[in-house]
Length: 324
Image 1 (cartoon, helix red, strand yellow):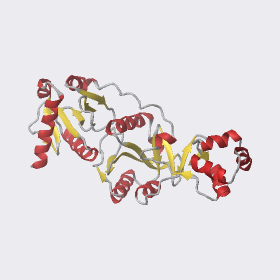
Image 2 (image 1 turned 180 degrees about the vertical axis):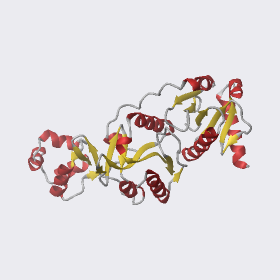
Image 3 (image 1 turned 30 degrees about the vertical axis):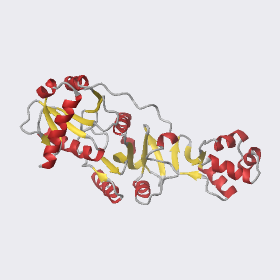
Image 4 (image 1 turned 90 degrees about the horizontal axis):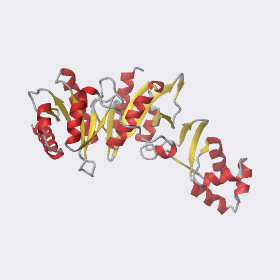
């Protein structure tokens, strides 16, 4: 299957699952292919035939974007090396959850989350420690008795009851012993970090020298500016005075060319899904916006004194086009 067909199939699956899906990020380099929202759940999805193509730089960017946009970064792929990804198993690459289209279908369409995740040493599951302790106490078994049944140490059983995860073999042995389900699913959208202990969110990269002037003016106007390296936008900007997180702006900057217009359209589509606004700074513009992405000349920006003034201009220009 071609990558283009795979992207189309995954996008259609997300739409069938009730997600609103952005336009595909048909530019390079790119850290994700589509943004998708269902209710309060926002995901940034990278779609690959071979997940070995997912490198550390892209993983770091997706994790940063997840933090800025309150989104979950995901990779949906078919295989690693010459081996297909196993169904209903969550893998991790550079701190980002990875799974197959079948697993995605079960999760998003069938509402059946995966139970298994891959980590160094094999495949593991989450053990419900409280339920395990209740089952053991109901049988009046000591920690040592259960340890003997499993062929592990008393300390290991104690760790299972404290929430340590277990191999598939141990989980099956426990469920056979107690004739009860003792595993809990991998919460991909909210709890993946609890399963896979990742490093802190990577630091922002240095800004492109061509963008420094605009980003400096934004910072002086009262925005926290997070530069990006592999996105349709050059930065994610947040109003320093806004504590709700609602005034997040996808920010672009370049001459207003056909390529810039394409980027502005993609930024608008992503912004509609992510519930952000978007702005593109240019030298000269004969229009005020592109599909809801506000266009502002650099000279205008330099004259703005604070975030409120900039926010109002962005809102007016984007809403004026939406109303047209």
